[in-house]
Length: 306
Length: 334
Image (cartoon, rainbow over all chains, first blue to last red; front, side, top):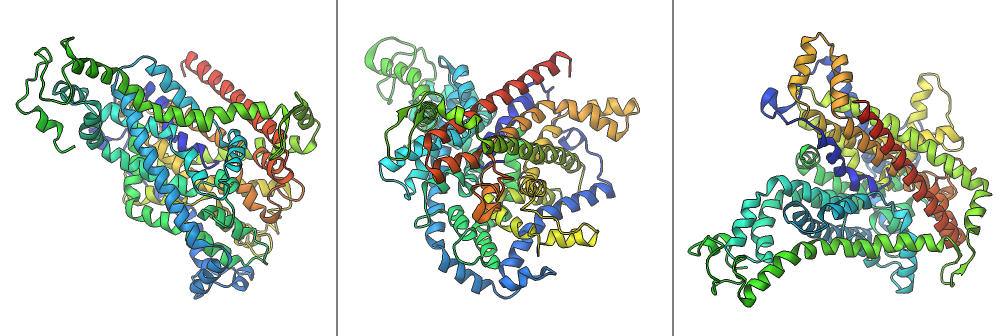
């Protein structure tokens, strides 16, 4: 689904998921509701699903290392070729991939950092502190997840134009500094993980709010902050709609550069286009290869918490 | 930040009823005397609002204000860099009379349906499979999530190659099973199916993991009881699993619908140079693309704003319908 909303709203799914759930029975039957052994048919379907998931990724590597002619001549090659370096050179000739990678890293890094920081603060307040209007405000947070970027880009574009930020990455960073999904994610985590006694004890001991945040909340929240940071980074790295509008080919993010590569004025070299896609995807695939289990754990574990 | 809370607690009285201390940064909540305790109370009272302020300030600036301003713009004639000038509902009337708007509306609907319904059903099936006791379960989970790591842009560029009518692998494969030369970009339904394939590929695994998490929280006794009653596995899936995770299903439906309403990058890049118009005949132009076309290709920001607000109205409508359905289901004891 469109880039922003779906990942953003996804952890929201866990509210209703758990709202009317009977108490969990972890520890029984291996912790899950049902743990039949998977039969051959289950494995067969899973292997098919795995192949369908991974094949386009594998073929990206294949096509990125072939020549244009090889790709457009059936039968399509299924094994990697030897032109990866040549294609990479052409990618770098046609679009400013270095700038794009640096920009994407800065944007995704800033967005992830600020989202995690503010989400942890707000999530802590919503989970553990008493204040007037708490529930109403939390509802507002959840409701904001449903607003699509299309409804904000026109005024944002006018503003960005007026202050001369078109083509500058701060125009992409600023509107993404907070995320409702992050607030909700941290609230869900801290509601369960942070014992209220810990906060009270710190208060009784005379710790002020800042100290409580620094010495109590952050240490407890750290694993969730890491997962949230990764999710936001992935999402920001892959974000397309607003960067496409606010930036240009002189100073793009990776996704914007890819778009330029795919619809370039030159005769399109398909191998080079796919090679660009590979460059854009590889950093995240590496992260997934290393931290895949943690990311999966973050998505699933979060979804069960109430 | 040198001392930790734990260190602070050493040697200081634990009761909150003791007299105000002068050794610590802030006082006790109990006694009303002294500026320290007032400061303390201010701290407790105000800090929640301070913590949530960044979110709400940013949202007000970059979410709420633009949202409302878009609504105002939609009632004006305005180009980039010009002053807005009031035209009432003229932009909406022009949309109403524009065939391409209706095409875009229809495309958004059909693309939305064919990219979410099969996707969520497959995700459900996949989650069911992943819920078995498996060898290499970790591998399977990461593998089905891998497409989530790709971007719209990258995935679309690769699928454009796979779906190429002349040399693409998919037509080659279909040729082997006797389906000849599907025009994946120039004819309407094949193009829409191709685009929804990209969406489905990227999101099925992710939704499957969400479902899996919900399934794992279904208590085992429900299955035991069903098994005692002689229910087959399929029967258990239909009458235990599905009802138990229904709230999750509803939520994924809502979220996916919202996502489908704003499809933009996939059709844009699928179309290459004709992406803005959603293909030569607007055969896969979505509302988002139509809005971009109006606002940035033609330069009529007022009309583009009207399209945006139509999208908002549609989303509200869908949301209301889904809420109603959910309420009714609950009442019926579903």
